[in-house]
Amino acid sequence: MGKSKGILDRFLKYYRSISIDKKFLAVAYIQIFIPIILIGVVSFRISSDLIFEKYIGYTSDVIKTARLRIVDKINELNLITQDVLYQSELYNVLEKAQRKIDYYDDVASFTNKLRKIILGHRDIQSIGIFTKDKKLCIVDNTSQKKGLDEIVPLAITFERLYRIASNGDGKPVWYVANIDGENENNPAVLIVRLINNPRTLKFQGILAIMVNSELFTKTFSELVAEKSQAISLIGQNTFVCTKGQLNKQEVMKLTDSIKNENGVVTYTSKESIVNVLPIKEVNWYIVTSIPVKVLFRDIDKLRIWLIILCFLSFMITSATALLLSMDFLKPISAIVEATKKVRSGEYTTINDLERKDELGLLIENFNSMVQKINHLINSIYKEQITRKEAEIKALQSQLNPHFLFNILESINWLAQLNGVSQISDVVIALSRLLEVNLKEEKFLPLEEELKYITSYISILKINFGEENLKLEIDADKKALKFRIPKLLIQPLVENSVFHGIRPKGRGKIFIGCYVFDEKLNIIVKDDGIGMNPEKLNKIRDGLANELEFDQEEKSYTRIGLLNVVKRLKLIYGSNAHFSIESVPNKGTTIKIEILVEAIEKVYEDNLEYL
Image (tube, rainbow, N blue to C red; front, top):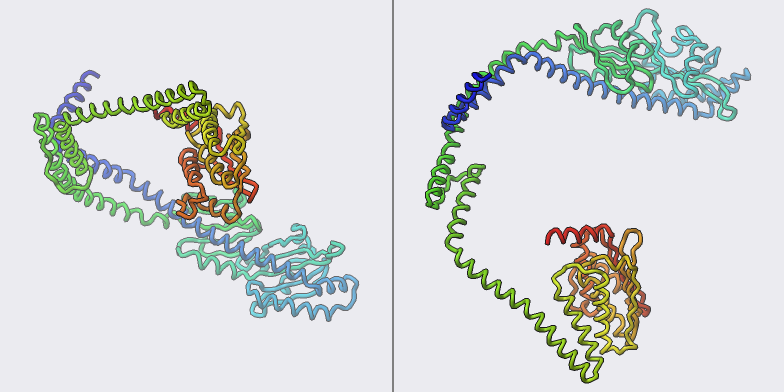
């Protein structure tokens, strides 16, 4: 253990002492040799898997496409059986046959309609109407050699036809049968359906449609391009159609054991690969098969090409690694030399190497760092002087508010001394307004905001008169504790006063603050002159689009509203909602809704930032 550790230490020491170009070439050769060895060892397995997966994917797409086309035809032909059952002549024929009345004229009329159906659908070979013991009407496509006349009742009895149709409980049943005994290459595909009286729902007869088997053969011929691949359609343990050669006994065993009713099931053996896809609509199967030796006959060629490509890759990557190492070393050497100069106190930049990659970015950042160091060294004394001046200005800005408050306090003292209480009240209210405006906090408790508005209204009453301007506030105790953006409600009150109440001469403003549905609801309502619908819609559009109002609109649109809406969107986003309603000569109501969770989160984030 100790010996191996010593060898490893000597190797690491040697590796760290060699130059970067040698390290780069060593890593490049290792990265080349390992893939070549792995490719040589596992090329056969990888090639087999790739070909197998490609075949499975291709076959899955083929048989899924075939299933879609067959299911479409099944649904289409099922609808045709429904069309036949809609014919009123059908039930006349069945009823007269049941009563043993002459039904020749009805059959003639009904036969013409069946003939039109066959001519319009080339996939139908023959249509017949039967009872349990006889045939009533059969119409064949004359271009076909065999129809229902040759099958029923010679190959399929009336009783058997009835049992097949009964399995569908009134729905179409697809059935495949051999019509030539041992000859499995000539199956008959039938759609059988019970005919029940539409009034009594009692059995009256059997509808049988013989499907042209070329329909399925054509579907396979259009989809399968691989000559060595075999594909077949199986229904009721009978091969409906087959293209190519496959082991039918083996395929039958696989379809009998299949349990998956949705996806493709793949079976592999030494001789062949078989894919089975159920068609659960008719309980049929689509099967594809291909011999293993045919599927993998190109692997040997592929392996030889892989070896040739690996050799060529080794030669090309070796030359590329050498060129890259030379290209990388030039900027790295320049950076090393520049850092040595910086270490000795010489702050010089690196000449532009016209690179846009990471090394070029590194050189650019190094040059920028050197320039900033030079700038800091040259400007450090100026910065110290500037900072001192900023500190002096900060002290002066702190003294100015105190000086203003002292003057207001002196005016208040003189007003009280001379018995002029109104001046004293105004000074106190103005002091409160200045106190709120001069606070550095961005968020204030709602209770302080309401106090600020009360002071603001008390000053306005000097112009309006005590009786002409009233303020009513109704707020929940819980709502008063929430911190909202400073001066959020004041612009709304100002708009109510100057654009709602002043034109009227007198009025009342109501402010309501409530918490319900996990939202803080702020309502500002006045009983002023209000607005007509046209003016109200124009204001709403302006607020929704955050448009600045033109000079004409400024007389009535309350620019403060836009300021409030913008602040709500910037601070709370979609968690805040602003609405305005107005009725001419009755007043205007503004409502703000903010999620309580958003109020708390924004305030906490603001504290964290500070």
